[in-house]
Image (cartoon, rainbow, N blue to C red):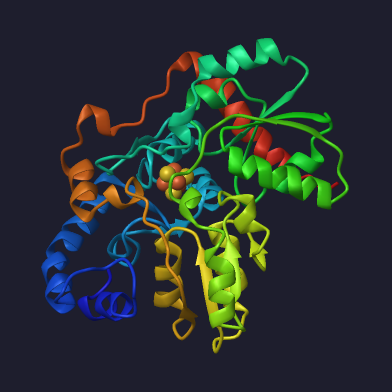
Length: 340
Ligand code: SF4
């Protein structure tokens, strides 16, 4: 179990994400809760998975695995425990349940939605299929299980470009993120890959917020600025980035880069917090955005779902869609491993 000093040391490095005025008192205050959660994890044979965007206090105390959607899906698949507590949002818990139907998957967030996942339903995908029957339906992992059940292949921000390139059909219907979809079209063009790509209308309210005009202003102020952007940002932002990738890809790339350099990270604040805590010294300029859904996770929520779970804390997937939704996720693993 993490000690109070270890947790304090990590959180004390953060510019974003921990707002307590007296950090030492905050850490001392949460230690009994952390101890209780660790005991509950043992008693329930549970593992805690945490997305990089959840509050850092969770990441540096009770989380057993931390990462992005793709990495956490693989961790969920490999988990040997009976119970998975997924500190993230609902669609990620559903993906864990699809991969581990026999396990209990619990969601501790108070508001575990997502503007992307909630932008389209399975019924709407069926209507699109009737209208555009020749297309391969590729859904971002940020979709609910009923949508995955109606799609052919699932992708994450770390593999979307390579998987779409590898799909044999030239006609692709990509959903639900129209900004990632527009970035996908630009990337396929730059790779010389000819695809007829249709899009739906969803956006991530966090990444959509980044203003393309911010980049030249900051570049003028910091000539050595290295810009990293998530593919959920607008194409006008992504085009100006030095590197585009998922949170885990950005995290790994910056590991090998110069410490004495200025960085602009166009993604949720949680990624900057992880870099500040785990590889201190890099200077971040500009701003980042918070996801209210990811930040609705808390240590109290994790304790509650382990100690006294309510019916609605368990992820349940209609048996009528389970196999088709799972096949959509399995297709992602198939294409991700496939080399063109
Ligand atoms: S950051 Fe955006 S895509 Fe991720 S959970 Fe929040 S709203 Fe959804």
